[in-house]
Length: 114
Figure (cartoon, rainbow, N blue to C red):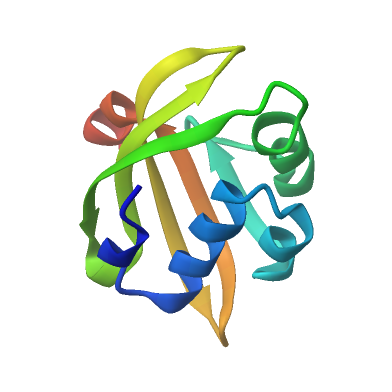
């Protein structure tokens, strides 16, 4: 996976933490009051992180296909034993060196709804 494609150093650090399964490093990059949406539905960021990224089924971002918005939006492929393989997006907002908003979902959701 080519994390060098990600221009934004905070987003790059988040993707590296996710890839290396460093849950604490991942969580530390986010603001305490982070807003998180999954498929357009607001959810608990920490619960989602634990359940979807750092669980025992070893889910992972298998590729980064496109990076937009100066490194704040990533399109790629994700693998999960729960959901299978699918194209996804991760869209970050940053304020004061912390991620304050994260939106994730399948690529077709972003194309239609956002």
